[in-house]
Image 1 (cartoon, rainbow, N blue to C red):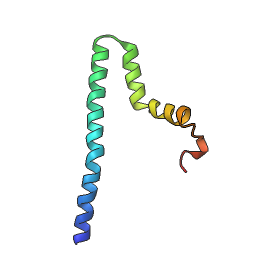
Image 2: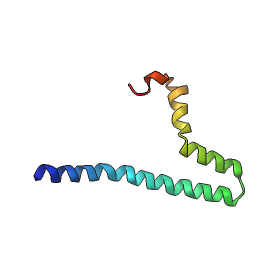
Image 3: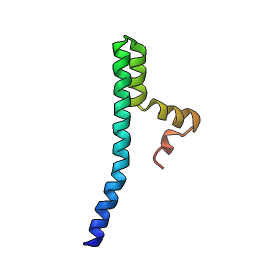
Length: 75
């Protein structure tokens, strides 16, 4: 019983940080999208949307900076 309780406590703590980061990101992304749409700055809206949701920054890092090959991605 002790091991099971310890597992639940640990997993809750580990899941709390990514949840907090996801909420933080969603909040600021939403604010940025709202203001860019309100100010009729379509290019900023598209840039914020694509950079956050398509992983453009991660792709740039992986393939242009780190020069990871497609067959090495999951090794």
